[in-house]
Structures are given as structure tokens and as C-alpha cells.
Length: 161
Ligand code: ADP
Image (tube, rainbow, N blue to C red):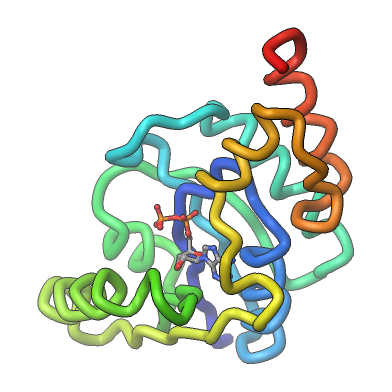
């Protein structure tokens, strides 16, 4: 069984993340999306909320699961019995950070392969932080996130726009 993890903050999941998860699910027998419980950046949604939003979004992907985790990502990978860690790469924003992360991950757990999938052109500019900014100002975000996420963002920003 070839298992991969796809770790991230997912605050909240976007169509860019979903595209990476869908494509990765075809490369591995099982993909476990791992939600950081305490990322080193401020978050809008709790870990439970982020997991729940993802769970609804991946309902039609039979070999994809989601759970939250704390501590080192490599320890999460070991627990999941993963052979690879998947990350998404946007053209301008991600390369250096992902490269550093790949080097550190290899140092901590040499057996784990680091697999980066290129973001599709239409999601190159899409980040959870920009999305939250647009949503907080009342922007139309319906083609950037799954429908349940549109509703969750509306609820969070209700009365603030
Ligand atoms: P992190 O805090 O680890 O960066 P994110 O939720 O921001 O968590 O992102 C998780 C992963 O998804 C990262 O590899 C990131 O580069 C990737 N990603 C984020 N947005 C997109 C997108 N629009 N298209 C493709 N990959 C993306």
C-alpha cells in the first residue's frame, strides 16, 4: 500500500488545495491530508472546523482521508506509514520555502520522499490568506473554494462586511 500525506494549514481549504489532493490521490493508494493543529500563523478556523470543511469536500474521493496533528510533520508521516509527503507549488510564491522544507524533512526522515505538484494556472494566485481578505471585504469567492467553504466564510464574516 503506497501511502502519502498532504500536510498544511488549510485555513480554509481552497480549490487549489483540492486540485492538488485530487491529483495526488491518483498517484498513491491512499492520501492522508494532515491539518496542522497549531501552525505558526494566525488562523480563522479551529483545527476541528478545518478538518470538517475538508471532510465534506473530499467525500467523493474514496482513498483520501483527513486528520489533524500536532508536533513534527515527519512523525505524522511515520504514524501514517507514508512513503511520501505531497505539497503544492505555485510559481512565484512557494519554491524557496518548499525547498527548505524538503531539505529539513529529508534530514529528519531520509526515507520520506517529497513530492511537489505544480499548481494549475487558474489557482496560481490563490492562497487561503488572500481568499480570507477578499471574503472579509464581501468579495465573490464562489469559484475559488468548495460551496461549504463559501458558507463557512460567510458565517465567520457575518456582520463584518
Ligand atoms: P502551509 O501553512 O503549510 O503553507 P497551506 O494550507 O497554506 O499550508 O498550504 C498547504 C500546501 O498547499 C502547501 O504545499 C501550499 O504550497 C499548497 N497550496 C496552497 N495554495 C495552493 C494553490 N492555490 N495551488 C496549489 N497548491 C497550493
